[in-house]
Image 1 (cartoon, rainbow, N blue to C red):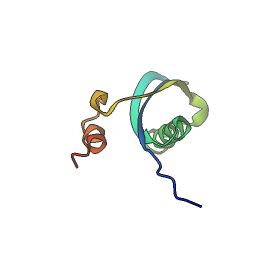
Image 2 (image 1 turned 180 degrees about the vertical axis):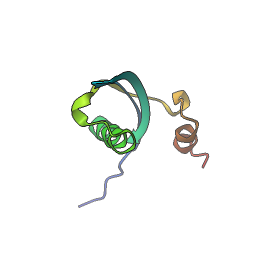
Image 3 (image 1 turned 90 degrees about the vertical axis):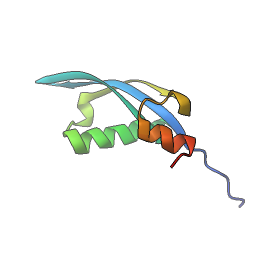
Image 4 (image 1 turned 30 degrees about the vertical axis):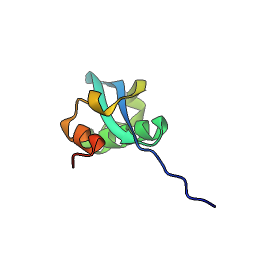
Length: 83
């Protein structure tokens, strides 16, 4: 079986956190192979860092972003190969 090259893309995930005592919008940029992987990465990060349950997170949209349009300076450097 020939090895296929996997292309890692940049995604911007936007959504809303609706906890009983805390409601906020969020926008998070991640690098992933597929949009589903980007959503999973965001859910894992919010769960571990902010203790937000998955049922309280609503994803509104996932868009692929060009490396030049990334707002996160660290991700931009990684995507452009400057690191």
